[in-house]
Length: 390
Image (tube, rainbow, N blue to C red):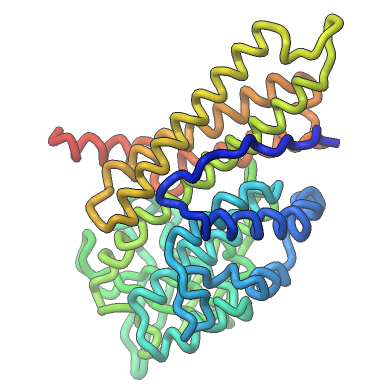
């Protein structure tokens, strides 16, 4: 069994979080420890977690922390969601955290921000209640970072559209009831002519699970649309102006990834610290050997640097100004650091770290997606370079 995770040392309140957020954190941490973490290993082996997790989250008010009470939410804001993202890192499965996060942080926000009242009642309300599971469908086999190359087409017909094409690497792609889907609605190239449709699961759609290095409990899918009909009332936002919708949530998605990565580093470090204090070699705990002690000091420094950078980006984002540079830096730094920290922690566990029983190898595999998803490291560097006028 994995070494017990030591309780982190008490920390002073870190702005922008308040005492209210820390009370929420304590509540979520306890719920995750009771309801999710004990099942993580089984769900990883099954390559699936039960859909019933969503209504259980809803019963705790966790699917609608930042949404108004009128839609079944808790009336909070993005900081409440940030706490949830951080605490989901303690569930023991990156795939489980990703499936929940995709529903909360990337699929439902566009419905709330751009949806009509009718669309919110039909889709956002049941999503907050855990009755419908949502997925964001943008990426395609030949259009990842280059969203201007989307090929999935929506052709105008009487009363709506007919959609044909495919989407790739879609989190919740198999289980979803609602697909917030980017389509081309004109033959015009580039960013023009992209629209978003709310597509209900229906005949004509095929979702094929994809095997992955990590995130095993998350169903990631290739989705094919074959003459799928979508009614007029399911156009999200304005026709041909979907690129703005894509960009609207990018900063929050990347910030969420940074928050999750820092929290994952913290969990890996706590677990490794506990292990090295207990594991005895050459007559004393390995944490007392200089090489190990120095490596732990390096990990602690990496963790603190990325925590500070990510909280700085979070403060800038919630202040409402232009935080693109800060968020991009946090995303770029934290994702690679999370993988490096997980790898270092695996090394400090020795042979035990390579075994599935400890859970450290899973953390390393799960962390490897970070430098790819939500915008690759290379894209982040390009954004930063342009922000510097280069």
